[in-house]
Every structure is written in C-alpha cells, then in structure tokens.
Image 1 (cartoon, one colour):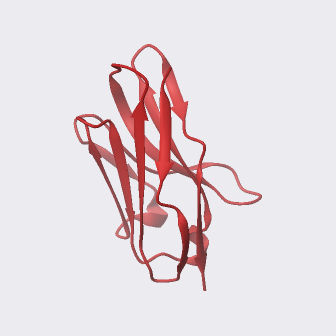
Image 2 (image 1 turned 180 degrees about the horizontal axis):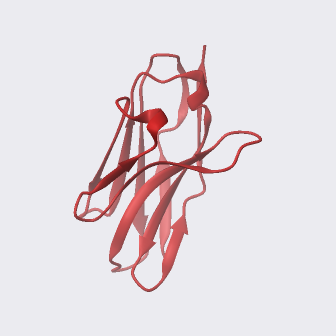
Length: 116
C-alpha cells in the first residue's frame, strides 16, 4: 500500500518562504508523476506543480516564478519550495503520486497559511 507523508506546512508572513516535502513509502513502486495540489476554503482542488520521473515540470500560472518543485527518485520524495508567498496561497496542500498500474495516491494534506 502506497503511503504519502507530507511535512513543512505552517504559518508565514506574506513575502516569506516555506518548503514542503512528501515522502512516498510502502513498497517498491515505480512513481511516475509526483506533485502538489492545493485547496482553499470554498474552492476546488487545483494543481500547483508536478514533476515526472524524468524531470518534466508543470506549474500553475499563479505560482510561476515563485515556486519550484524537485524530486529525489532514490528517496521517492518530492519537494515544493515556495517563495514570495502571498495570502492567496493560503490553502491545504496535498501531495499526489501516480504509480504504475495502481493509479493515483494522495497525502493527507498540510496547511499553509500566509498572513498579510
């Protein structure tokens, strides 16, 4: 069973930075795309950034130039570095991993709150 454990959320002032980590475990799986989504109160969950196993990256327009995503394939871990945070970045951030044959898995979410 695939498990995703997120860490790094918290409260930060506008303009500050946070780094999220998501470690996947549970067996010898081939993780394809790994990424981050977020859901703000009253809104739908949306893609923030995703990275494939070979390093192809996709960002939401709203975070381009401020966020970076990276992954360590040996550790099955994906990172989201968030800089120049804005109050509108406040949301629960979820890690998602796509696993060959098994499908998509989600983490439990970590709260990011940006104060103005």
